[in-house]
Amino acid sequence: MKKEILEMFYKQGLPAVEKLKKIISGPLQGTGDFADIYIEDTAAKGYRLSERIISDISSSFVSGAGIRVVKGNNTGFSYTENLEEKYIGQCAADASRIAGSGKPLQTGDSEGKHNFYDCAASIDEAAAQKIDLLKRAEAKAFSLSPYVEKVEVMLVENIKKIFILNSTGAEAFDIRPLLRFSVSVVLNKNNRRERGSQGGGGRVGLSYFDDQKSPEQVAEEAVNQALVLLEAKPAPAGEMEVVLGAGESGILLHESIGHPLEADFNYRGSSAFSGMIGQKVAADQCTIIDQGDLPAYRGSLNVDDEGSDTGKTVLIEDGILRTYMFDLITGNFFKSPSLNGRRQSFRHAPMPRMTNTYMKAGKYSPEEIFKSVKKGVYAKSFSGGQVDISSGDFVFSVTEGYMIEAGKIAYPIKGATLIGSGPEILKRITMVGSDLVISDGKWTCGKEGQSVPVGVGIPTVKLSHITVGGTG
Image (cartoon, rainbow, N blue to C red):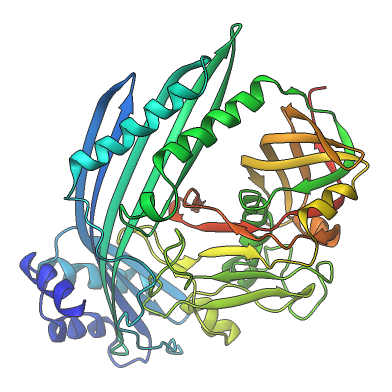
C-alpha cells in the first residue's frame, strides 16, 4: 500500500518524503511544537437512473494537501490543490503564521497495517454491470405495486488514497473505498402520494450486492415503506412509551448522545456531559460504544485522519460515563488515546468525530419489549433532526412509525416527532433488546461545515416516556 500510494503522489509532483519532513519541521524551529501534512487523492463516480433512463453519469477527481501547525494552544491550517514543493512550502509558512508563536503532541506510528475493507474496489470498472444493477432495482420497484409512480436509483462510489506525515516522523497510509446505493420511490393511490427511500453500502465493492443486499431487496424495502405510509393515520401527541427500532434509530443516539461526547465540546465545556466522566449518566443496562475497526462498515477506517490506528472506545459502560472521543489535540489535553481525528478532505482541519457508534445489545427479545407496552409509539426509522449540544435537547422526525396497543403493533402513523433531551432519555431506558443492528451504509454526519460517512446502530430499545409531537 505504501509504495503504491507514494508512487501515485510522486507522479503528481509531490516532493520526496525526506523533503516533506523538512518542510513541516521548518515552521517549528526546534520549539517542540507539532505539524502534520495530510495528502489525499479522491476519485468518485456516480450513476443515476430516473424517469426510466440513465439520466446522469458523473465523475470527479481531486487531490491536494492540508498542512496543520500547532503552537501551544494555537492551530494554523492551510491547504493547496498543487502537490509541488513550492506550493506545499507556502502552505506550511501560511499555517505557521496563522498559529503564531508548548508542549508537543504525543502521537503513534501507524503505516496502515490494518485492512478493515475491500481495497480492491475500483470505480473505473464494470460500468455496464453497475447500470444493470440500477435497472434491476427499478424493474423490481415497478413490479411490486400498481401505485408506483416514480422510481429513482443511484449508485455512487469513491476511492480515497491518503498519506499522512507529521513532525514526529510518524507516517500513515490508507486506501478507502466507499459505495452508496439508494432507491427512492413515489407511490400514488387515489391522488395521495407518499415517498419511500432505502439504501445500503459501506466500504465495499460490487460484491456487496451478492454477499449482503441485492438491488431488488433495496427496491422492495423502499416500496414497502411508501405502502405503509399510504395507509398511515395521523400520529397522536403527548407523553407516552416509545420503542426505538433496531438499526436506523441509531441516528437518534448518534445525534443526541454521540456529538455531546466528542471531546472538543467537552474541552470547551459546552457539552451537556462536560466534567461528568466517572458519573452515572444512563440506565444500568446502557452501554454505548464508538468503534472504527469494524470491517466494511461506512464509518470504519484503517487509520483516522491524523494517522492513528482506529479501535473501540467504550463511552458509557453500564450507565457510567467512561470517556469521550478524541483527536490528537483534545487527547493530549485529556491524556487519552486519540482514535477519532477525522476530516472531510485535505481542505479541512481534523476534529473529534464519530466512526461507527452503537448501543450494546441487551437481554430482552423484541417480542418481550413490545408485549410490555400497553399504549405507545414504535419509531422504526428516522429522517433526521436537530440537537442542541449544550443542553442535549433534540427534535427528531419519525420516517416510519406505528402505534402499539396492548403489546402489539396496531397501525402505521405519520407526522410523528420525538422531542426530548439526550441525557434524559438515557435515564429513561427500561429495556434493551438482544437484536443489535448497525445501519447499512446510509448515514453522513455534518459538523462545523464538514461531512463524513458514519455508521449508527442500536438494538430495539424501550423508553419509559418521551414527548411525541403528532398531527392527530
